[in-house]
Image (tube, rainbow, N blue to C red; front, side, top):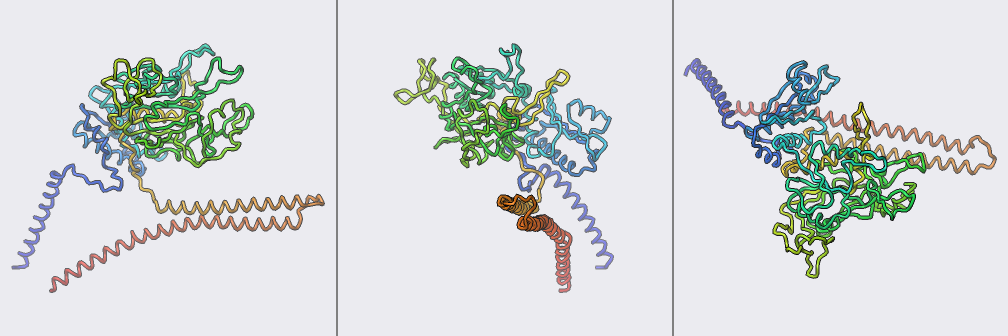
Length: 639
């Protein structure tokens, strides 16, 4: 075969190979369209089962508009990376919905109709120093009847809840009717007429915020049945509830109803009054509990016992002293004492509690109690009576001995529950569910109700809060008047905790199942560990310096007290001691600086090693691999 013919065949083969390659690519795009493989560690690009069920229940098309300032963020790579993450998540929603979600990605350029439309939706623009134009990164959604829902701005620090926030928006459009919440409370959260001031009281801020999101229906404290359209119960300070009312609550929860229950061993917002109160004395807060229901559900509440915490105690100012005093019964629970895995508490900063109680599972209970807020290990339970007529909170510190136990202040109760009324609906006028001689709870004269449930039909979902005072405006929000409007500025997350709980419980079980997702960012865990180790060494050295400083000062005081001549000048021994301390302090400070330099050196050494691997070792290995492959091919051709 001639050389020219070989060249033609080679050229023809290459051309045919190129055509076959293009055809294979086009064919694969058609055959494997929609195929995806999520190899990320935490399956970041895979929707949860709860989200998939929500999308599968959409009956009418939903339009989603992702307004993202693509051009304005050209010089902000971190924000662009997160925007790409949001867009990919929205595309996952669109693909999973099977045509029931239509996604549009819009760049709202300045002074454009798109920007005007974004503003009409209520999306938030952010002015960043890196760009002169405002930045939009929000989501607007509409349904077939023009109902709207928005996420004003996707905050990167809330990335763990990205899927939950989008799923919640989709749920609000798929089910536009407002959720009905049944309020069972011994307090007037909605306001009312104040007999002392002869004026109408404003609603509590937390009630006002909740009423903007839900249809809150006041059921009172005496009823024998819960309306069918009530999705969940909000039970606050349940005192002296009749057996009929407790039975209605019991059956509501056993039938799958959700509930937020707030009890308190001593609620200052619910003062006791009446002929039994001493003349001239301030009212005492009343406790609340649901012992009949709690006992049947397998949980216990510290009735009459308040959780005091030396570490979380808040400073307060009393009339006895102008200086702040740390009150062991007033707790500021920070994020480190909150559950990071539950959507209700994972994004909160601090929750302020006052004379709160704690929950615990009873022995042998089949339920599950997931702690959401806990005390520190420097806590103990104190009788609620000690907080009555307490002129000086510092008295609580006398004889205080921490138990070392982390008390559960807020918790989520789940699992299969048993009825507190195993014998059925109690007869009218019976105040308790005490068993009769046959070991069964008393029944009505008409016999057992045919719809009575002895145990739950599905796993319960109840959030328990051991404090009612946390709802009081004074503990978490400042209300100011601004041009005739009441502006609430929250300094704690009390209101957010309650609204989050109501919002979480009012969603379908599918939405409740959408938990926080793993963070998209990948931290330098090795570097972080190096920093933690170095900080631990630094703190240890710093503590040693402080101990030696205290020891030297103590020694100086002993030398000064032993002087007899009354001379104000330092003695030779004192001067020598001071000089020794100065030299020692300088040496320890050098050691502290060395610890910090060693930290930087360790990090730099790690960075250098990674650069050597990425820049030198990997190309070297690839080069060796190519040379070996060429050598083997040439050797085979020669043979």
